[in-house]
Length: 88
Image (cartoon, rainbow, N blue to C red; front, top):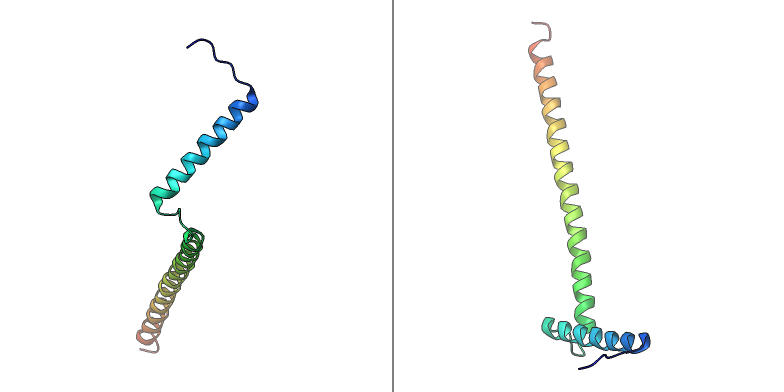
């Protein structure tokens, strides 16, 4: 083949077609190429939002339980100290 010259517009069009073919192939491999794809993606987004909310709630609960346990331990230690050192 000799020198092939294409215009920037032709190159852009070729790249655009190649990108679209690649995107279609990737979506097919993921099973997101049919009419249910939009619904599937919306469900996945909803699932991710729920997962993030749950993760945030779990961490909040863990921190609350640890803090409460620590404060109860301190209150118990102070109560034990006061009981053992009051007037005896």
